[in-house]
Image 1 (tube, rainbow, N blue to C red):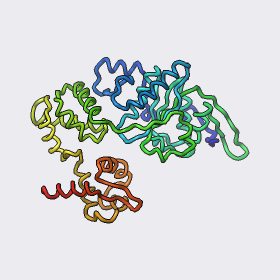
Image 2 (cartoon, rainbow, N blue to C red):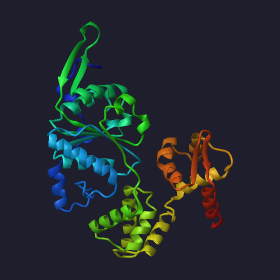
Image 3 (cartoon, helix red, strand yellow):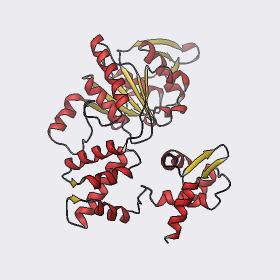
Length: 352
């Protein structure tokens, strides 16, 4: 039971508006009809490209909830950044024909912030919390009874003046998203009825995403060019679309054209120092650092100090793709360059 200060007013139950977005299915459909280019997200499971297994699970769960006329079970989505966790949350809200409040865990600084969010929900609505593993302990404990019994158990005041208060909540759905599943405590993780990992996308799926978005931004891209871009997008739609925007900039400013070919993509990527593997200058700097002592594993903190960067950024942004393509391995003693990674970085050094 969480302890909340007794001097709670109406304003204390509110969260700063800039930390939240209220998304209504009718709003996103209206933006879609108006061809809003800022809204490249799909609004139905059928439109969502990739993640076929996950879509199948969600389709059954959503249809079952609609059949029983009850909210969807609490859902946990986990995976690397840029794979579509927020998009899926909005999509679920649209499929359930309900609203979705979106917040990030770092913005929920105090227990009263989560109380304000929960009290602002209506029957059947969705609360989406991004990076849910970053919730503080007191806030997380308030969610236990809210998720399980749809009530808030609060202790107001202190010492002899303390009093208990229970507030009933409407039945709602909590969707949590995280890039660090292991960082979520077991009591919170176990309260999610649905838990799914979002996997990296295949080249064909990314190619289709690229082609669809190119059409939205009035860019003509041929088959070879779209596939080339998909291969260096690290299995991540966010990276694919970011690279496509940079290629568009290069095509329109340097070449004065809206037609993108494989040759143009190569020239554009060279100008941004991105190679055929999808590695940028910092990735190569990371591999070069390990190559200086490729026999003995190097600790993450030592690498971060040598590169002047944050260890968490290296661990969750840089390393996953290097491991995926076989250039890096993690050992109990530290990071070690593979033979494939050493061959790659040596060949790059030979070219300079």
